[in-house]
Amino acid sequence: MDKKEIAFLAARYADEKKAEHIKVIDLNGLSSLCDYIVLATVTSKPHMEAVEDEISTQLKKIGVYKSNRDGGESMIWRVSDYGSFLVHIMTQEARDFYALDKIFSFGTELNYKKPKTFKKKPARKASASKAKAASKKTALKKTALKKTAATKTAKKPAAKKTATKAAVRTTAKTSSRKAAPKKTAKTTKKSIEKGAK
Image 1 (tube, rainbow, N blue to C red):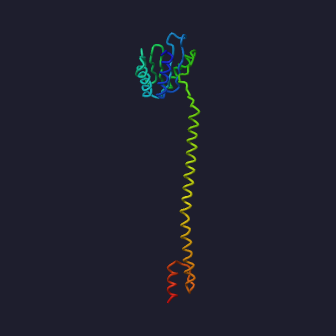
Image 2: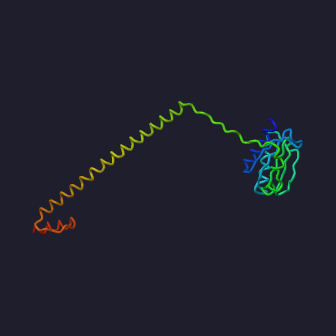
Image 3: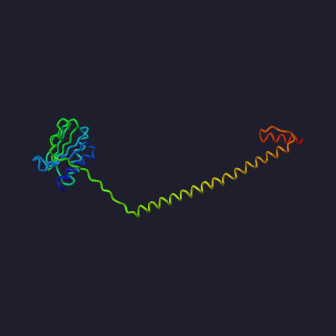
């Protein structure tokens, strides 16, 4: 792994820990200090410690160690020296005050983020998924039709019951001798019994 890719890894690890305004500046051949500078802004001292620890821990896993560190107890700025690149982790106030972006403006800013790769899916799989979706739609339509047919058949017996009640009422009215007011079925029975006596 080359120096540039390791500097990119450090920037990505800072990004994973929510550091802001991350820059990787290429100074290769322009400075005797180092080849790359990584600048990252943090919001607090605990955030600074988390970012620094993440970078250090992850780079140790691939065999890259710090050769020096400065600002161990500082609350605004820490620098880690990895030989070929430096990592500056600082608060926004320190970044504005010291203006490292302007100091190293003669270098070239690099894009440290991994390029996104898109994989194309085979056309057959896409058509198969469309066929499945279409078959699901037709199955849903069939079940919906079955449900509506079942509700229609359930409603028909209910209509017959109301028709038989109406028929009973009309026969009760014709069989009674007195004209009774339409109140309930009990009153019609009583009126029928009175008329029979």
